[in-house]
Amino acid sequence: MSYTLEFGELAQYAGMFARGATLTLGLTAAATVLGVALGVGGAAARESRSRMLRTAVAAYVEAIRNTPFIIQLFFVFFGLPALGMRLDEYSASIIAMTLNLGAYATEIVRAGVAAVPRGHLEAAASLAMTPAQIYRHVVLPQALAKVFPALVSQIVIVMLGSAVVSQISVPDLTYAASYIQSRNFRAFETYLIITVSYLGLAIALRAVLRAAGRRLFVRGAR
Image (cartoon, rainbow, N blue to C red; front, side, top):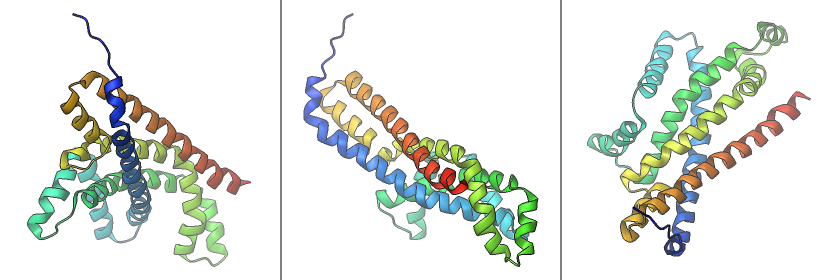
């Protein structure tokens, strides 16, 4: 059985592919900012003196890490309305991606915090810095520098996982592929383009984040 590749028919959908890729990156950018911030806060909470706070954050982390992302997305989009919290598909996607990244970022940042030399904390305390100042100015910069490669990898994983938001009708890259192939029946060519697109986005995102990390941490260290 022979199969003839026909990419010409997909040219008319170039704009839809581009819009889908742009939306995928937009969702990832929003989730990255919010998720990393949540992770930093979660890591601080895991180190707090409050047992209740530590337990609550640990439960959140375990719940996210041990359930599929698509179930988390469905819970936010379909489940929360039962409690009176109605969200559009974009908000639900960002919240689900943020919660997912935040849980993993919590443990990643926590590992970085644990790797900060205790002598640095003692030196900061000797300068009469408050615990909050020590965490912000001494612990956090060093912790993020140590774990930044792991954070980058997790952000890329979240971006790739965002493909499931098409299941709640978010017109991302995967949604575009499903729409296009259902109309021209060129599934092989369509999903080949999507595969290459996600590969390109992942490589580009990793390169951009690594460059940002060099600017933030390497120069700061000098």
